[in-house]
Length: 457
Ligand code: C2O
Ligand code: CU
Image 1 (cartoon, rainbow, N blue to C red):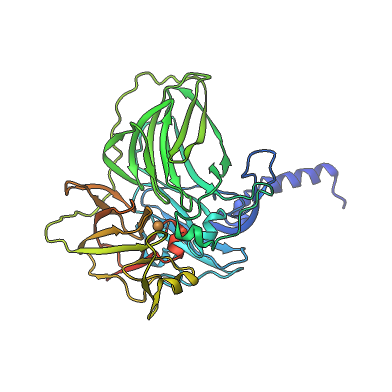
Image 2: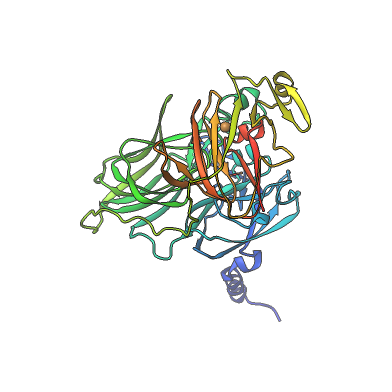
């Protein structure tokens, strides 16, 4: 029996309508090489590394308390792992090679399976040779929704990045071990993108209320975010709701790995400019534009309520032990010496090995944790930045509270920007058992010495 052309078409149609996810498995996160238009139109596409074929990787959006299951399939030419940044996660799922798991070799896979206890804006990124792998595009947003979220017209995840591309070929500069970058401010780029696009524009209406989830996925750039044609509040930092939303007046810094959730109202009318701009010392960079047309039916612009809080542990500062983390090295304050494994090496020897920074005297993750603490105990950590550069210090598996100038407890964060010469204290309850990394999220700094860890048992 021969099959009629019509039947053939029908069966093809039926096949193509079958949910493909069922065949490819919806829960795979494939790390792979791909191509994407990163540079402005007219330039060639850029070879990138991505999760699933595009940067950022697809948004993972789940309700608070849900389980996230993803099989990482490594189709890259390098071993890799995934870290779920900011999630107070089961230690075995934290994605740190040599500390919580072995690297996932090319062609191999690893099953990530964890709960997300807190609502908020998180992200996932590669955590092996992260300086290179994140710079090549291995990151994506992880959004955990509140049971009852704020009343907004749009909810947008906006992943900021800063690429260093060859101005002609648009290829990613492969010079990841550049000693000048490592010992200075890190690998700053020459092209800023939002969600993998240069200067994108998002359609909005006048008077619309937007939730913007800004995520800084850049290797080294600290954005200084300002709003134009919009007015609004910061409602959460690093995923965690602020007790009192903070009106955006001028600009606010967003360091590598940090997130800020904004709720903004569109003030601009059709044809007028509305945008987000980063105002930095060397100039202003437009990050994205809003294309305003039409007027929303939203009438009164009211004050906003704080987001519902996450269930966080109580912190008391009384009798809380203080642990100092001294940050040293880098250009202008070169290391005299530091430990590498069991050996103490001179600054010159360290530089030859590509090590420029030290945390508490170690120019790499030491064998022993800098803190070994009891489950449930409360601690203060003092970051003393004796270097000539800012650093974005990130703690895995926990959020800490910033201790403000007046000694009171500030916002919950997982990454704190410590300016040059600054001393900043944070407080936390060590309530998540395991081995947890503590490092600078300027990824070149982490790779060249600013890496430590602590143990909670
Ligand atoms: Cu977002 Cu150890 O990293
Ligand atoms: Cu740093």
